[in-house]
Length: 207
Image (cartoon, rainbow, N blue to C red; front, side, top):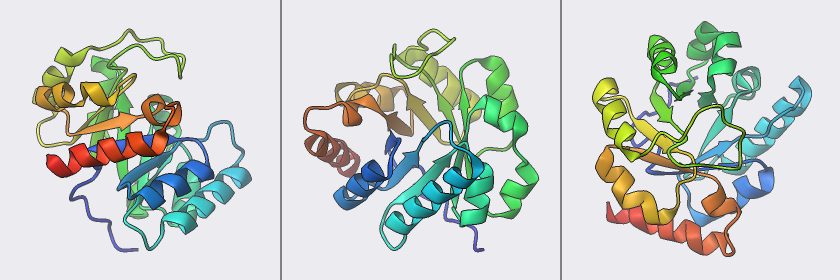
């Protein structure tokens, strides 16, 4: 399988969703990078949802990032994968690289950053930047200044900021050094998700 293009990956606006309906909706809106994060699936169900999501995004501008299910990503022929620290300890990095997958890794503290960098990721995610109720976190909010510190440490590797971020925070977060912003509730819990997505896409185009 040809190695995917790293250019413009991940896009500056990077929504994270948990269903095929959201993948389809965002793809139709012209989103460039979409992460599918559907938890607690067995191997068969994971392969099915990844395959279905790829069927939605194939032939479009959307890059589908598979969260966690690296085996399904390899078997289904995905090109992009995201792993948390727990997932990373159990993943076969050799198999992932041999499949040509680009890899993003979550980090929350210095030890996790060191672990991530040892895996030679294609991007590093830092979070949560702000307080979030969507996911139980054992880490306190990182705050915007941490973005600048992390970016200095990782250099040319793209840095994704995630956690409680709204469109109104975007300019400040990009100014602090983030290359991309991963967004969850600001889209999925918004009263008008399509309009919010268009706001984010407009910011990307203006950048």
